[in-house]
Image (cartoon, rainbow, N blue to C red; front, side, top):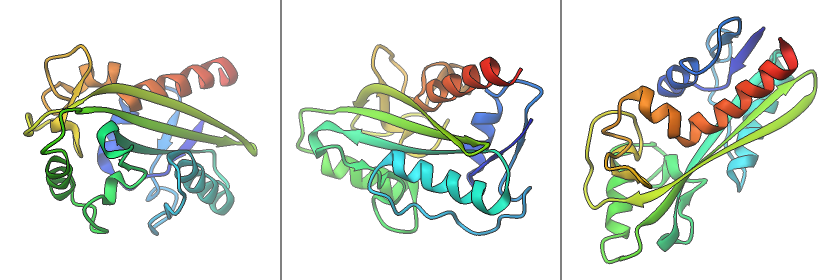
Length: 193
């Protein structure tokens, strides 16, 4: 089976590729000749995920997986949420995003947060979405250089290491993207093997 992963983010491609079973050929946007940045203009994580998958499916006639992820912080009324990648501006700078987040939480006692990923899978005009959520909290200063984005300041509930300190294999077993991807993999195994 050939499926396009609708992302130009090498971290996402690597992370999802490490979870996808053999026998499935994952193609990047570059592999299918898609050079444009996919729009994310929806108001929800679910909407952005669907928008990207639908665009690739409609324009390149290939089964598609697209995901969108947001960090939802309780004390900030769910922000940065759907705007997580561009929280500090349209240039999508992870360090600036994290810095702004920590500044906005400086006087907050409630540091509860959750990562949420929604993966949309479209094949043969059928649309299915898979959600993964991991609860945790935002620490006061980054720790670790693994992962990407907000990983160094996100401490998953029940763990002593941030996502930025965890090895990729450990993170994948508990992460929001890992959870959503496992649901996708189970669906693919149950329906396409």
